[in-house]
Length: 123
Image 1 (tube, helix red, strand yellow):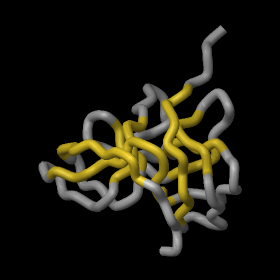
Image 2: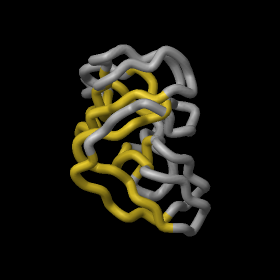
Image 3: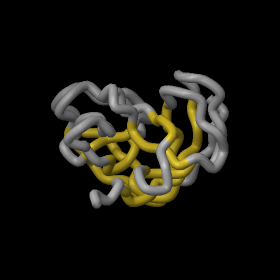
Image 4: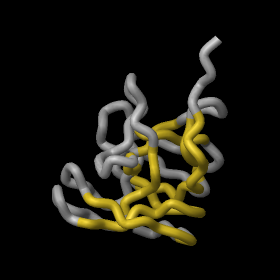
């Protein structure tokens, strides 16, 4: 993987499910998702962990994130709805990060600037 990143802060999280490296992580220690009943991203897993193990979640500035689809430089990103914690393209009103590098296909990695999770506002 040839993605650079700048970790300024991380928190220790206890995995409530098995966690892979460089995926969006929710506040409860499982993958974040953009599916109905949104499970917001707290950060990005810095390394893998089995259920019950402690791991670091990068919460400030940037981290590599595995993508579920092609991501262009500058795209807003959010967790995929499939519960894998991988990144998909978001929007200005629905995102938790911004791509600082591109990834051409699922399974590749993009550097993502971690931003506060933003959701669409209901009318």
